[in-house]
Length: 117
Image (cartoon, rainbow, N blue to C red; front, top):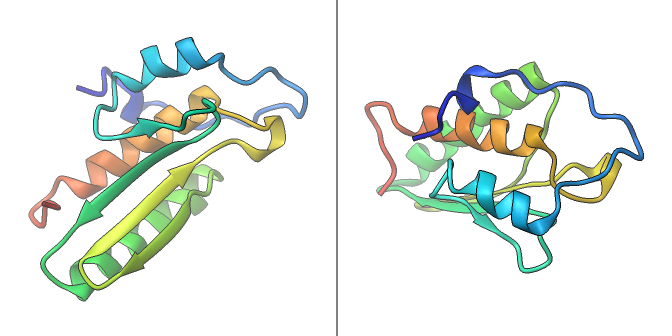
């Protein structure tokens, strides 16, 4: 349901570019329904659950490699059986299309054989 977002690349964002307005962020976030827009509209978040610590760690490692390749880095917290991801574009103090692209790419990584619960 990502409507091609996962096939796009994150592009450098100019400091000072306007962040997405909350209504636009919510409209675009409908394309990555597992993610939640924060009340202030500046962040996307998702919690994934797994059967083991190793499964959570595996996703974190794969997301880390993706983040380096895309030069767009989520905040990640994880532990036994869970991983929490949070995306924002610090340079503009809010959400950018890149955040939605990264969310869709993370969703794609989370789907293979060890799909989160």
